[in-house]
Image (cartoon, rainbow, N blue to C red; front, side):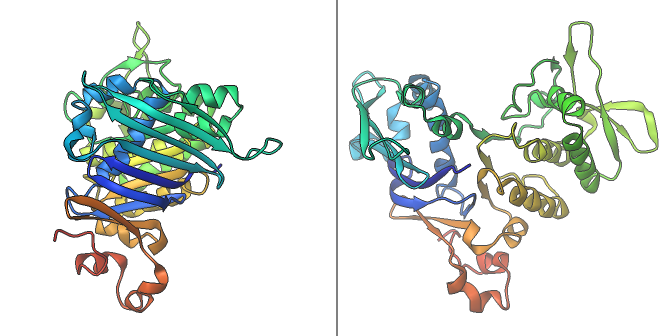
Length: 362
């Protein structure tokens, strides 16, 4: 299933202007801290909130319109976004700030060339506080648009502290989808073991490659149908441990393996992950690269990274270099032909460290 093939962004956070930028199945963002990688991913988080008609809540949670507009409304008149699907279908919208600190749609259009329908037909909405995209997709039978936007998930498994939600008991029936912070990980793995045995075994085997001491997960429910993540060590199947006994890196890798090895029909259409390598051993990062490539065979992935090891496992065409120039983020995709002479002697990671690719502090 195709995702977003081209993207236009203007006036959003550090992104002053990005026009008709190509997106592929695997998109790996590299760049210095503050260059704009997270802002690029943040746009998709806003799209998901828009689709669920929660834009105004999202705007307030982010600090109001000025926090989302490029250098505030004093500099930027409007946020403009355009998404191209399957080559011909285009969704565009423009948001402007109001005096009561909201963002409203000054325009929202969708044009498509669906088979059997005259190409170029456009539905336009304006002056509304919430998106009409869900209505458009429903009324005009555009299920793939709903699948791409509604299926967009931004995953963040960084929180592995004592009070992290992934370590807490949760409802055994919380299995509709893996939550973006892994809060229902135990219930989700239990469901996979029961209903998708092959995927479950693949997850367990992959975790064992990174943590040879790991044997298997243990699934038990308490009297009020709660479950928490438990596991056993090899050689001691009778002693269960909780997630608190796992290292941060091991727990994050379990979350990533579950996300990227779950059955295709359960996996989101568009997966975004911000710095998934955090806390992982270099060997685990190499395995992560393989998992990302596998998932990109059928899904669209957008990943930001600071990892040289992860970059070394990517093809040049998978990599987008993010720089900050004149107080604005710039984006360019690497070209293998332009780097061929360099790649005969160096890896992509070496070239990044030597500042041949850009994406380093200026």
